[in-house]
View 1: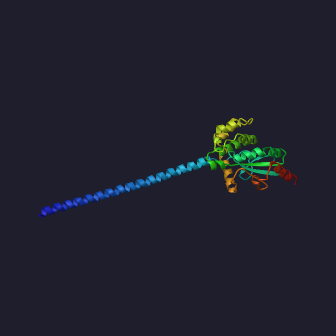
View 2: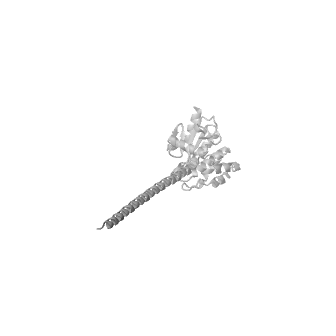
View 3: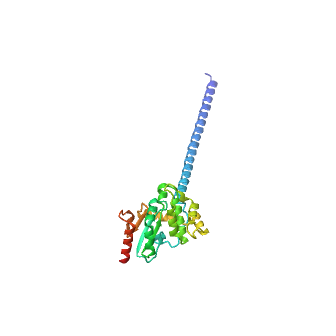
Length: 258
């Protein structure tokens, strides 16, 4: 083989080697770009998921980023109880309730007249603690919306009457009708003097949403896991199968004589 031919083949091999190196470098850059793009996509997806999760959490809690505004006259630790009755009453009944809770409605229907009689007689004070247990279990926001509306009624001095109207018009447990503010405002029309621009604004603005969330958190931390939970003398009398309105009246009257 002539020197010229050998030089030509060597040059060709060198060119081929250079080309292969170029291809390897290009392939390496391509793979790096794919990996980089994948990492960016994963990070972007994680960011989107994080935002969605945060928004879902806010929706679940009623998007309560605002300050905690307690309703007028709220008492107790953190001002989380709505009191009904005279401050001087010797007996106190604490009621943890949810306006979507069918058992709460049954309890109210059974005990309402007796409780009202004892309250009017100055013997009993009731502390209502509003929670959102059914929202947690069944989904929706009717418990939160109704509790906020009840707190708005407390601001107007109409809590008891509106409280009773909500239970009298309670939808089926699976029906989240109370999530509609217009429905809650419509029901306010059944309470004389309640359906005012101030009440409507309070309901639509969710003025007491954060307060309701705080009240429900207090329920969780206190170990109350069902509604209604009705405490008298530190005991859950709702769980007492022998309890009746007549027996509750006897207990209250006995305490007031003691």
